[in-house]
Amino acid sequence: MVQNIIDVKNLSKSFDISSKEPGLKGTIKHFFRRQTKSLKVIKDISFEIKEGEIVGFLGANGAGKTTILKMLCGLIYPSEGSILVSGYLPFRRKENFLKNITLIMGQKQQLIWDLPPIESFYLNASIYDLDKFEAKKRIKKLSEMLEIDEELYIPVRKLSLGQRMKSELLAALIHEPNILFLDEPTLGLDINAQRNLRKFLQKYNKETNATICLTSHYMKDITSLCKRVICVHQGAISYDGKLDLLLKKLSPVKEILIVCRSEDDAIKLGNSGFTVKNKIKNEITIKIENKSITSSLKTILNNFDILDLFINEPPIDEIIGKVLIKKDYDI
Amino acid sequence: MNLRKYLKVYKKFLHTSLASELEYKTNILVDLITAILSLIGSIFLLSIFFQNNGYIGGWKFEQALIIQGIYTILNGITNTWFNPNLTEIVKHIREGTLDFVLIKPIDSQFFISLKKINPSGFLEIMLGFLLLFFCIRINQINLNLSFMTLSLITISCSICILYSLWFFISTTTIWFVKTWNATEVLRSFLYIGRFPLNSFSFSLRIFFSIFIPIAFITTIPSEVFLGLSQFWKILLEVIVASVFLITSRKFWLFALKFYTSASS
Image 1: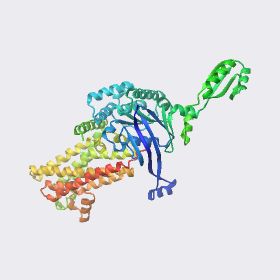
Image 2: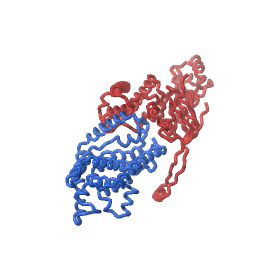
Image 3: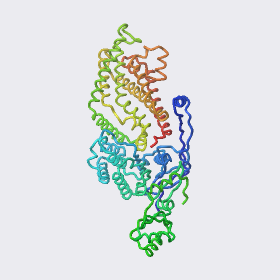
Image 4: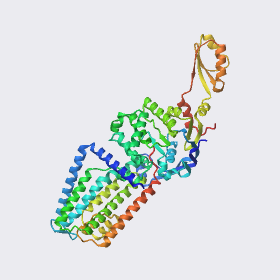
């Protein structure tokens, strides 16, 4: 049986946040008498993650995804509740715990700006107590997986965003961590760079059985990497489960565009009991429930003269968008 | 603590920060020229103070040069290590890059205090030592074992006090986010350390000994050089340095509990 590597129970986090009124008067007031209030950004959440799982954290901006990730890494102290990661209390930041995890943030970098990435890799290797031979071996292996070579010797400031992100990944993985926390790792990358990064993460997970917790606003990252998603809405979990199930629940019907041989066939099909979305000459778009899609298509193909048909999946961004604004999805 | 690992990491810190600095040759050259001009300017200023009356606070010009020498060494240390690293703490906290330090299996205070060096500060340290050797000659100081030991102890304590003060102020960034001004105020106070403690009024002497112990930093080591030191003063400096060092460490660990990281 696969063991839980992350165990979170009734976790909450509050921050003191100050607010300021606009204008000069507001600024002066803010300077002399700052109004602060305690804001509960994470509200009593509980979940478990198994070893080797890739879990996507979904939520709108400010929903609390990054705060959860940072509490799991031990960067932020929780206000209430308990977290166990790999058997450790993260905020104690024990050496063996830190050797097991890594954090990659798409919008922040740890590489030394004026030097080639290879210098940062060897610096990290010494921090993780790796000898030169072992470090060299790991850099070679990871650079092959990430398909970077010459870039290792070019100053970071001269690298493209994609090359920099790959180097960031290498720097963060040199100690071969078991748990990866990725906060929007594909932010700002072009389509090819995003795809390469996803390919790399899939391969890394397969080869090392590492657990990956990922936040991203790019749905492609989530759909191609994560079987399970945790949706966070205003600091609370609104859904925790399989991504497939969520998509089915949120999008119970599919749209089918059918090209009939004649306009008469299209009219007949339209009158045969299906929900018609629109009809233009011999082309008709109907809506069919996911559960009856096979039988309905069989009926259509047997009874009507069909030239072609297309099944239109609703855009995933649109479906997920619904999750981000709703409070609860009970599936 | 694994000392071998920490030495290895520090070697890497030295290597990477030297390599980073050497990327900008002109900057290093300007820094070196500034260090030389700054020392010449300070000695010139000191000589003006001593022009009318050969003494300030009971110190002759040749004796006051020792204070200048120690100040130059400490200023060099500040410019080599404290300034590039401890001002970076503010940046780390504002931009949330302290996250990368905290998730590494290494002491965070060690990392943020020693990661960078500014090589041009080395010249100041060297100039300070040269000035001290010159002062040893003109003041006919006898170089014996007890003198060397006491000098080493008092200068080390001065470095600890200076570091702790700087680190303490930088740590407050966790709450106040921006504390550039506070470190600048500390730097300004440091200039006071170029003059003997006795040259100030009683109330200022108390202020610079108790509240901001700048006076300890240069005056007590200088007194050791001149054979004027009293045991209780040296002991007091050791106690002050230890208290400052321990307090700054505890304060850092306490402050980390309030670190909220920057939003993404």
